[in-house]
Each structure stands twice: as structure tokens, then as C-alpha cells.
Image 1 (tube, rainbow, N blue to C red):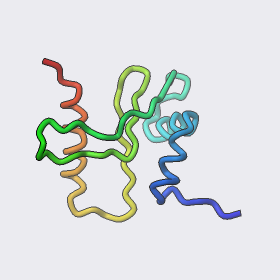
Image 2: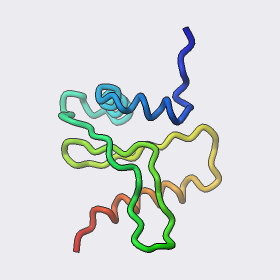
Image 3: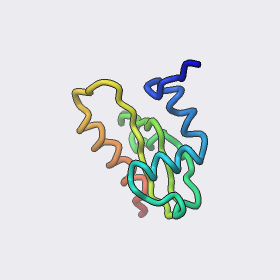
Length: 101
């Protein structure tokens, strides 16, 4: 039996539809005990645009923990030239979405 690689965007996203898989992945990556995670929801991956001409950010996987912590998971197969700037863009957009008047 041949297994599908997580390198494929479709397979990567399908795995994360299983909440148990999400919890174990986050626990393994961050060291947060699975027992402390009540729920890990998949959030809307489209980041808000505040102006018509602004760049639309689309996250690979956006998660919300039970304490409202937001996690962005991005899968990169090969080195990206502007990866640092892209990460900063995503983090800034996530932060801006939380700002209230």
C-alpha cells in the first residue's frame, strides 16, 4: 500500500480535517499537552482585506485553540525567496483582524 505524501496541499488539508490529527500535530510541534486542548477549530483561511487593492492573504491551515489562540500552519516544499516577509504579512494580518475600535 502506498501512502499519500503530506507534501500535496490536498492531502495536507484533508489530514487537518480530523481534530485528533490537529491536536496531535500541535502537541508534537509546540509541546502543549493534548489533555489541555478542549477544541481546535479550523478557521477561515482568507485574511481580511481592508482596501480594495490590498493583497489577499490565504493561509494553508488556520486553527483556533480553545483559549482563542490562533495558529497559522504553512507548508513549504521548497525554499521561498520571500518567506520571511510572507510570514510577517500573515502574522500582521492575523493581529489586525483582532483589533477592535
